[in-house]
Image 1 (cartoon, one colour):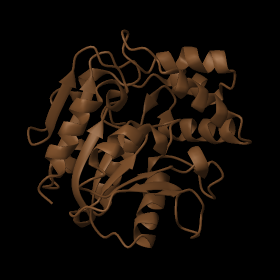
Image 2: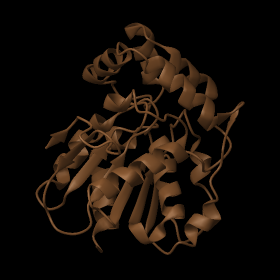
Image 3: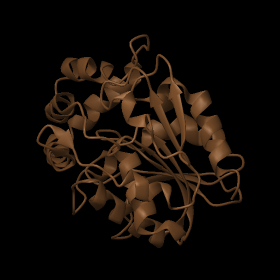
Image 4: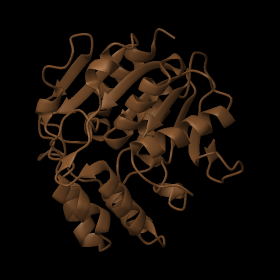
Length: 262
């Protein structure tokens, strides 16, 4: 079921699929993306589990959200939306900036989070390809966007034409570039990114899995190295910054295993 209108003042646009038991799985996209990035992953869970993919403030159908900013701003908006949906406890799956959003939500209200699955999450180290993200935020030309998007994937992965067309169409929405540029400047501190208290995250007690690709050109794979031992780490060879699109079968398996307990 597609929910793309703001019928509630505090409800982010989202895609709600499935009616199975257990705590719902919430999907949070990365910088410059939207809920549609999770389409194939949501489909894999539809028969047995409810899943919800949000458009974060300043993205997708939430480009004109009243408050746009960093991961903390997005975390508050997601919490408010979950409250409107009557969901008190969920599994969180976040990619890149969405991973930072999920981690912040777990740190703020661990009793509301059953598990964390973080795909190349933001905030796990200072290094970030700030030049690429700033160029991506300001780009509007379809050819330029296609060239930039290729940098988000592994070297052997063929960029889906449908994806590049979708991103170009989103940039045609008034205010889209301005929103992304504002967000970029809030998540990037000069030439580095703001960091999460990873040790505190490890102490929360919930199952946490972190996924990275060795060809990630946005956030270096070494940010997955030497994490606290209780955090499970999965590193995929020949995969870039978009593991859920480059290795969907494996990512679905990891999510399924991490959410099976509740």
